[in-house]
Amino acid sequence: MATFEDFNFKLVVVEQLMYIDGTLTPRFHLADLLKERGITDSPWEYAQQHGLAYQVVPEARDHFTSLEISDELLAGVEVLCMDGGNQVYQECAPVWDGEDDLFDIASLDDLVLLPNLRRILGSEFLSPRLRQLLGARGIAAD
Image 1: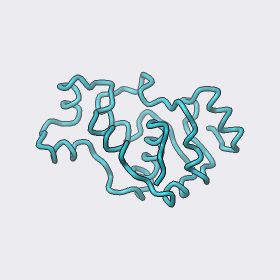
Image 2: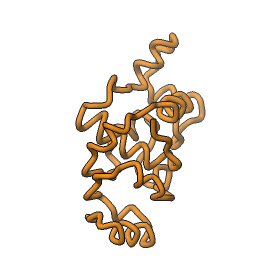
Image 3: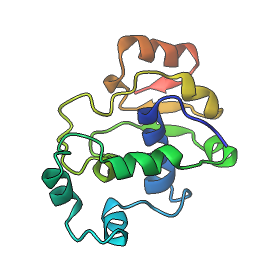
């Protein structure tokens, strides 16, 4: 199984595989996890009441950090989309407005895990240095 260096890059991959393609299952929903733990608050209320506004909820971070993604699924990724409205971000940080750097990608070292990646949508959210790296690897940055 692949090991990701950049948690935020992994989240973009999870968005594609779990919430768009539906190939990475089961779908994670923070509300379901909270209910399993006997917490009846909505994810938004839970984050607010525990001082987790504009932060990744620890339970979601733990889930996605330990989530294993097969090499076969990773090889199927050809396009990624970085958008503040991604479902994975709402599952991680239910009180987040997309106006800060909470989910900014700091490194593209994990590109080696996606041998067939051809395009990244929303690349304007990457630093100029990282966009240049994409171009050097022949990955379209839209």
